[in-house]
Image (cartoon, rainbow, N blue to C red; front, top):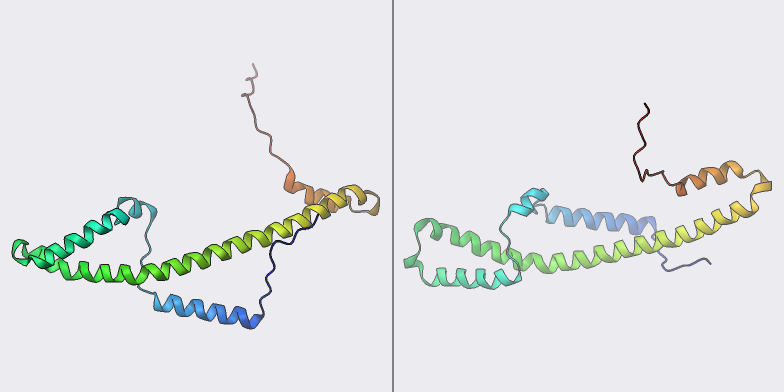
Length: 159
């Protein structure tokens, strides 16, 4: 049974415009940071619960400048600017994540449609292709489904 859960047809002009838009986004967002997984693990993070704390702490520091040391006073404008940037970046990230999720879902659905037809065709080759000279093709396609042998027990050593 063939399925068609998704359909996507993009003209070359659309692909070109999409790539130009992506290039524009990459240019506009060139200040974004890339980190290694170990850096992400070690970094102090501001999650939803911590965000309320951080906002309130920055407000308190700003309202009471006489109680903070000069080094912290010097860091406050940068922290406030970072908070503004977080507020600006979040809605952009939300839209990009939604778009990326839809693109990923569409790719998966399109691939599923392709695999459904390919499997039906392969099964048809196995049944009807024997006397049509298609054995080599059937064997080549069947390689996809060969499982490697896994040893459940170690082989005994020869003496």
